[in-house]
Image (tube, rainbow, N blue to C red; front, side, top):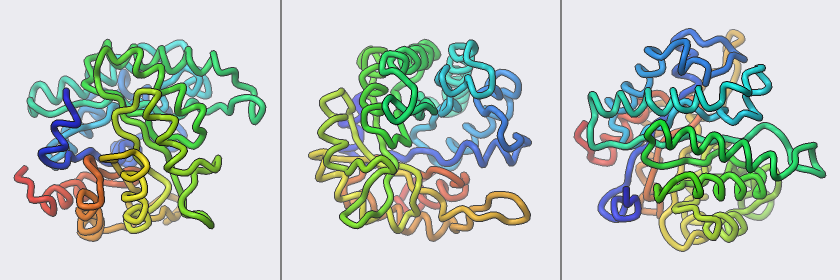
Length: 296
């Protein structure tokens, strides 16, 4: 998959929020999403199918929290390979049966532990857990790897390096989670887009971008900064508005029409890949596909 050649022709469309989609299908708050790859495969497949049907060129596997270190919070660390391979095969299976010619990204999120001295994690432990996950996703048949929602640049760099080793030539995407700060945009750990690009591109990332944390309008101002920092195209996935509690449940109230109108401006600002993050339903991806002039 030559992702740079593809985005030179047209922007690619990612998917939306897996967590919201699975909760709509019965996942309980606090449950392990990745375990559903083996206990509720039909529901996970249905989410992938819905995003492909909406127009996504690329869907992410249901493996965001799939490192052994993060699964340890559920007492499931020893099942990391099983969950990641299963998650990859579910997405690839839906693609192969119904949407040939599209792609599956192996989703890799933070490991849930802080590196020393901020926390108790050793760098080699992070290398081991990210390497295990990346190898399992590749074994499951993904077309690329997507390291996302990173706050700590050291963790992100380790994840990218291990993903590149496992990828066997597949593209590796890397995105940090930013918020507006006094001077530009920063992650929770104080990382700005330029610093992120300086570390993640040499580590092997094909594209360096941003996802999560902020709304589509706030991210619109970030996109050109990301493109400039990375020396070319970037990618961006904002949340579907700011979350708020409604009757004890998290709700995102960004309309598909507003989301699509704003995110459709990203390609002109330097984004080669666009999509949605937390709370983004298939309806918003379908509206974005239409705004980009796509026929589903």
